[in-house]
Amino acid sequence: MTFTQNFTAVGNSLGWTALVATIPILYFFWALAIKKMKGYMAGLTTLMIAVAIAVIAFKVPVTTAMASASQGAVYGIIPIGWIIITSVFLYNLTVKTGHFNVIRSSVLSITADRRIQAILIAFSFGAFLEGAAGFGAPVAITAALLVGLGFKPLQAAGLCLIANTAPVAFGAIGVPITVMEGITGIPALEISKMVGRQLPLIAVFIPFVLVVIMVGFKRALEVLPAILISGISFAVAQYLSSNYLGAELPDIVSSLVSLIALTIFLRFWQPKKIYRFETDRQVEDTKNHYSGGQILRAWSPFIVLTLFISAWGIPSFKKVLLGTYEGGNAFLTIVNKVGSAFTFYPEVPFLHNVVIDGSTGKEIAAVYKFELLGAAGTAILLAAIISKFLLKVSWGKWGKTFVETINEIKFPLLTICCVVGYAYVANTAGMMTTLGLVLAKTGDLFPFFSPVLGWIGVFVTGSDTSSNVLFAKLQQVTADSIGMDPVLALAANTSGGVTGKMISPQTLAVAAAAVGLIGRESELLKFALKYSLILLLSVCIITFLQSTVLTWMIP
Image (cartoon, rainbow, N blue to C red; front, top):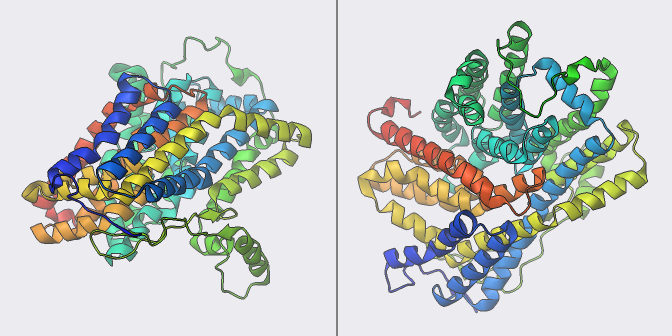
């Protein structure tokens, strides 16, 4: 039995249908922000409400709705949950072996100022990880690093969530942008150029925002030179690389430029007043003089991690890992066979080709994606295996740490499975498209509301890529109908989406798991929500101006 999506299922009205579609979103906000439920309870009840609405209001067959939830739950484990497990595990290894003390000391040797440490790790290093891996790994790793350096868990997670705004559009080697080319037919380079003429206008201010959140406006001015070096170098590199190199490299290039520029600058300049936490010792760890070899060894797990996730992000090597390589290299052919053995896509019972797209009339394929070797989490696990030898950890301690890590984050994993399950149910029922169609009816004001589509998409799905897949065609068609440049609309969807990443239930669960705030996702939501809305408003204004008085900025 098939199910055809109906975007006017409630009272034969698009408006009423859209209003009903917002119920799970509003409930989730209420559950976390007001009721202050634990994340997994909020996620589980949101999923139950979404399934009920899908069945009752949108007339989705029960078996289809449940199958869709199961597809989302599987995706919540692979690749998202797998990234969290391995990221936290790698961090735990460095802590258990005492090497994180050396890492902490090496960071303090660059600067003891906590404000600049946050910029270096949350903003610059986090952007690099986003460009190489994405899917939650940057927030998990950088938040854990900041906690290890002495930052309070809530502050560390919140700062990393906000810092992750700047690089998300070009994350995972540009996948959020390149995926739109196949959907719309518009070259990815053109979309990349337009995004590169929006996000740098926001990215340049992110370091300043981070420091103001930490210490207030007055103390932020004390490190203004460092803030400017970090933000301007990142923004300029992001603009140039996105406009002349394409969508694949902006995060890698801009993060490295920012990181190197700030590190070099700090060799010649330090703030007159070093900002420390009240809990910091008066005698800093910099007095523990570690040798270069000790520092290199302590950082080696993250160096290996960087190499692996960078390799995993290369599109051509990704084909090898997924078993789709067709070249003649003998070594790659062997790896390709291994990748093929660990890559399979079984059809989802009661869902595959059962749902008919309400816009196109085509059947929607539904498969469970098991890309075990190609998953970014596997790259991190391999880094952890190599780190076992570099840090000289016994297999017993290595295995015990792994089991402890899984036990530590079991509830965040449940949260992620539930919220991704909700996202899949919402897509199957047509809830997301219904919301998009309502915003598309705003006419001449659509350029202003266009980024809101991306924001909603990322909030629900947790992924800028998924949001672009969901709304790219709608953005293109609506833009054509009102005389707006489609390239600008697609860029707006991407840029608006990045501002929703910090409050996505998936991302909140990742951050909470990384810093030991399990069950306190509501505090993270409260921390990040206003900044998400402020940044979204900024993108809306930028997009509207570019569609009216700043049309010269459109490529």
